[in-house]
Image 1 (spheres, helix red, strand yellow):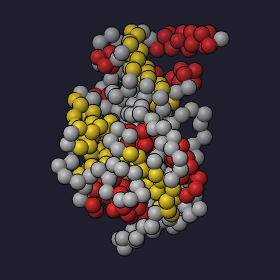
Image 2: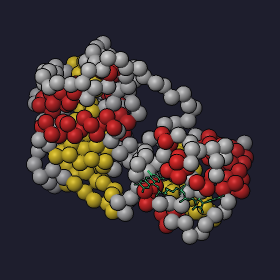
Image 3: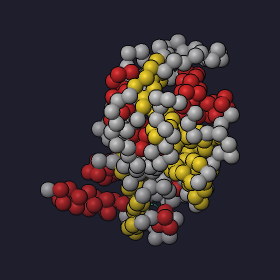
Amino acid sequence: MTGYPASPALVLVDVSPSGVLRSSAAELIGAATAVGTPVALAIAAPGSAERLGAELAGLGAAHVMIAESADAARGMVLPVVDALSAASAALSPEAVLIANSIQGRDAAARFAVRSGAALAADAVGVSRDEEGVVAHHSVYGGAYSVESAAAAGPLVITLRQGSSSLRAEPQDPSVEVLKVPASGTSDAAVLHCQETAVVSARPELRGASVVVSGGRGIGSGENFALVESLADVLGGAVGASRAAVDAGYVPQSLQVGQTGVTVAPEVYIALGISGAIQHRAGMQTAKTIIAVNKDADAPIFEIADFGVVGDVFTVVPQLVSAIEAKRG
Ligand code: FAD
């Protein structure tokens, strides 16, 4: 359509209930450049178009659509699906990129059903071939890499956070307040919504570039200070295996794996973790994997780029001291 960039790739960006752009936005916009020209869509409270538009242009969105909704802070999915429908009708994109978060998967699935589009969930990359947009996936605990594409129509893709390192060049802001016709679909009513801020000096696990995880081999919740000490000298996030979570060492929110968080950091350090398939499913796409385990036959060493056979209580304090000494 006249006025919109050629070959648009629609990117739904997450905005927190208090109106702050989530960290996944830069990655989604960057990934979109591999398949088209990024057009960002945000659902936000009235009055925030100018601020968000400037931020999203700074991240490389060639055009920004803001769907203003008084319900934006309530985190409902229906306004998001309505906005996706309106933006998609205006742009006719070949690709719609959405974060593979709980909310993102919810919106993507509902939008795909409503629009009759194909859905490619949990992609770790996107590209284009002579037939159109392709989503790349890492499946069966990272044992296989597969591709998916739409037989016809646009491809709706949820992208695993941390999986793409592409970043887009900043653009001059081009911002539009999108008119979103109400779909008339009935939705749940949220009577009260309160954002809970997690106060931590460490980066968020999902999306951190360095993750240091501890397993059953750490032995207790108190001993997790060892995992934290290494995470802190590296500026990383702390993760855990399910065995460590089940034993009560750390909260479930730190669990990495099939039934926990999926991470794709630059560096993943596994301390006292055997490397069960369900754990690998959540971390195998890390760029560099380092393992410390006292059992030389532990399966984690099959996927580790660097491995130390040794006791974590001997190896990790030495590692922390060496890093601190090097930094002076
Ligand atoms: P273990 O397998 O007990 O391994 C502990 C390791 O620590 C051993 O290799 C040992 O050699 C080493 N060790 C012990 N002491 C030391 C020391 N002092 N120094 C160095 N090394 C030491 N697991 C997940 O992690 N995430 C999931 O999301 C998940 N989802 C699951 C879903 C299903 C349906 C099922 C059935 C299982 C799931 N699991 C998951 C559990 C998974 O199968 C494993 O049981 C779990 O990952 C094991 O955790 P672990 O490696 O910490 O413990």
